[in-house]
Amino acid sequence: MSDFKSKVSYVKGLADGLELQDSKEKKLMMEIINVLTEMGEALDELENAVEENQEYLESIDEDLGELEEDYYGADDDEDEDDDYDEDEEDYDGDDFDFDDEDFIEVECPKCHETVYIDEDLIDEDGKAECPNCKVIIDVDHAKDTE
Image 1 (cartoon, rainbow, N blue to C red):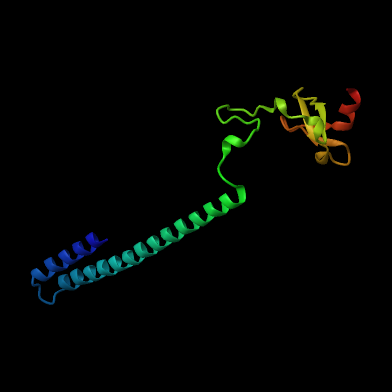
Image 2: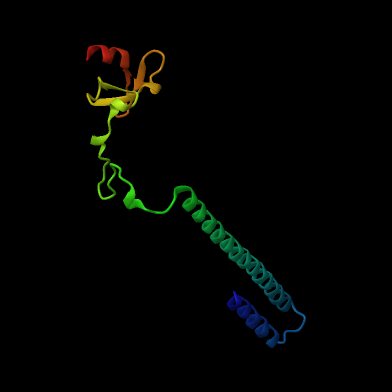
């Protein structure tokens, strides 16, 4: 920012060095220099505000990090034993037991995939949406045919 101010000062010095009499050109040059000076001051204020916001943001980030550590505990990812492997693209859901939850296994009449639908997602008419192709499945009818 000081580079901008020094350039404006240099331009002002050049204008003063021209020793122009009270002419339209001198008035124009001085007004341009005044505008540039005001722009420099405004840029200084913006730069200060950005620095303050950056410090504040860093402070919030540190506080959030502490809260996350307190809430979630230490970052011991190795202790967690779940079916998701970060190196694999897909979730290995083979170990998930759908019998432990309130899921209903049905075959979608459109995509012919076996899907598991949470009982809470079935409406009072016994219908639910296929998570694969979004067609409405008559779950009660599909259960009876199996």
